[in-house]
Length: 177
Image (cartoon, rainbow, N blue to C red; front, side):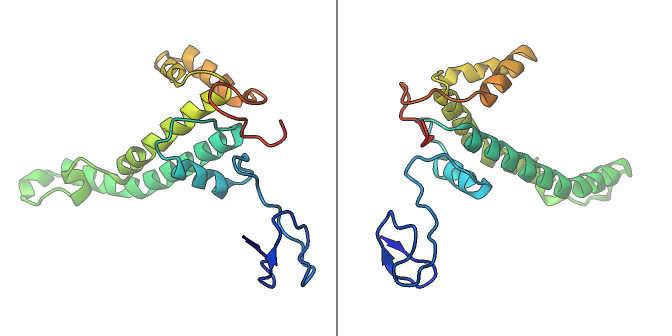
């Protein structure tokens, strides 16, 4: 069911304007349409947390990369003062004081490492689905273990438009092809 956000009237799915109040209606995105905004792409990646099937268009992949970078940067900025305090305490013969180390570091954990651990699977899955959009197997991600050359190849592929129409990994996620 589709409802008018202005007056709440029930609308046919293809309505451009509400017949009751005349308010313009946002277009309803077809299922599988590529994300056009940041939050929609992030939602797709979290819904497909460990889903390695299907295809991910460039927008979905690059919005996820931006999200991961911003969250990682934020976690690092939160961790840095704690790291500095911890290492300053270590340099002042802190272990001889008998005090336990600060909590996250006593477990060998930090916010940054927890964020990286939480985002590892969705990053891996969106990367595999991005390669699927190019009609390539996810095993090509192993190129990342080849310094520089592998990274350049994967970067070029990440920037390349996916195959038009369906391929062996599923239908095209873009509506215009």
